[in-house]
Amino acid sequence: MVSDSQRFSMPRNVQRVSFQRPTEIHAAEVWELIAKCPPLDRNSLYCELLLCTDFADTCVLAEHAGAVVGWMSAYRRPSEPSTLFIWQIAVHPEIRNAGVGKGLIISALNRPCCESVTHIKATVTLSNRASMSFFAGVARNLRAPIRQALCFDRDIHFKDSRRASIR
Ligand SMILES: CC(C)(COP(=O)(O)OP(=O)(O)OC[C@H]1O[C@@H](n2cnc3c(N)ncnc32)[C@H](O)[C@@H]1OP(=O)(O)O)[C@@H](O)C(=O)NCCC(=O)NCCS
Image (cartoon, rainbow, N blue to C red; front, top):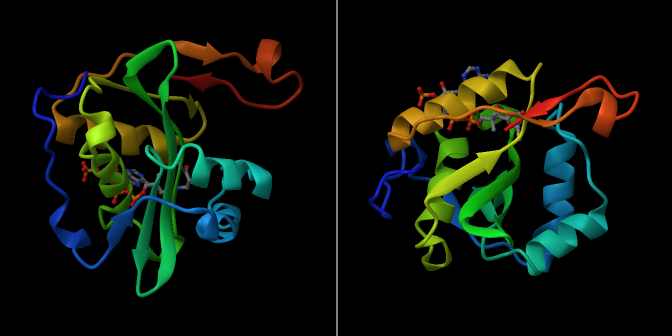
């Protein structure tokens, strides 16, 4: 559960990065950025176009010096609108550990459409230690406890692929 305050402060060192709502113009750049951010799955460009249009209220783009350096795809769960589901977060390798990833989440939470959001849900592949540490850091920053449970199982949901996701 995120803290009661709906206004969260941005990490201090991301002042030269702008966080904004995406438009269809950004989809191709988002698609390119994700390709530079393994182990994220690369979606179709069409999927990114839909995220940048139909889900733009809850998706966030980070720009620095005119280039897209960060991306978060997220939506409020239809069956549970007080929960923001974070699908993918990608930060350009050259600008990591500067608070951009955290800034993407805070930027979404500070939008009017997320005023009633009390929980964040994300699935993390068990082998992605960086992602686990990242979400632990974000939870600490928001003073929110973390609850973990198996969400998608390797054998049942991913068939022969080598991963499992916890939320
Ligand atoms: C995970 C990722 C989004 C983090 O972005 P970032 O801008 O570097 O993260 P931030 O600078 O905002 O860091 C926020 C917190 O996460 C921690 N963190 C970030 N990357 C980490 C890493 N590789 N290992 C351990 N901790 C890490 C930071 O130390 C910080 O914790 P703190 O608040 O206690 O200091 C980025 O590394 C990335 O794009 N990775 C590849 C794609 C991916 O795995 N995405 C996540 C799954 S959806």
